[in-house]
Each structure stands twice: as structure tokens, then as C-alpha cells.
Image (tube, rainbow, N blue to C red; front, side, top):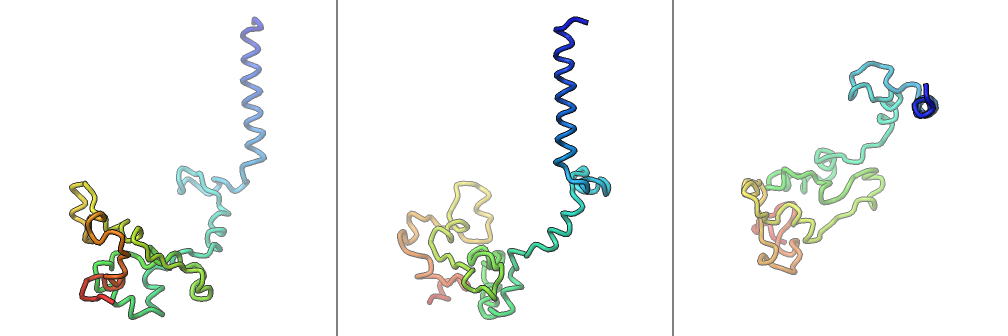
Length: 157
């Protein structure tokens, strides 16, 4: 064969050999050896134990209810029942042992993430009432009129 055919062929074979050598050293031995039950076999068996040892970041509403029963009860009776506590209070990783780790965001922007009126036809079907941020008490924090655990105006502070 001519050189112009052999050079690209040898280059392609060298690229394949390099790829296989790199793959041999970089891919863990337990990768994909336990069947094709996890995303087309792209799963490392040792990863299961690593995830079991990983501490959960979010506890959910039930975890908060153990100590904060009154707030939980008010929240479950309000339209905010569909929202997890940690959406507003932050992840409860390590709580209650690390109580300073939970941040409470009381900003208007946080409330508007769910309550801002959107110009979409399906936004009217939301469980949470939508407000126009420009006209609804602009510049005032929502907590000045609404208690987040009992957001009706009757539950004002």
C-alpha cells in the first residue's frame, strides 16, 4: 500500500491503543460489572456504599415536625403545606446539633420565587396565590404583613 493510506491507518490504530490504555488505568475495576440495571451499565458497584455513608442534606417536613410542632401544624393547615420547610429555612444538614447551620431567608425575593404572577396561562392554576410585585406593597418585606407559617392576613403578626 501507499504511504498516504498507511500513515492514517497507523495513526488511527495508535489512537485506539492509547484510548484503551488510558481507559484501563482510569476506569475503576467495579464499573459496570454487576449487570445492566443502572443506566445502561454505567454504574460503579462501590458507589452504593459511598452514597449510604453520605449524610442526607434535607430532612423534609417530618424531620422538622419533631421539634417545631406548632410551626409545622400551622404550616400544614396553610397553602404553604405543599412546600418543604427547607425551601425557606435552608438545608437541615446536621440540625439540630449544628443549629447555626440553618439560615432563615426572610427576603421578599424568596417569597416572590413562588408568589410572583407570571404571564403564562398555566400559572393561574397554582396552589399559591400570585401577586404583582410592582403593585403589591413594593419595597416592603412580606413578613411585615404575613406570617410564613400562617400566611393569611388573619395570621398577621
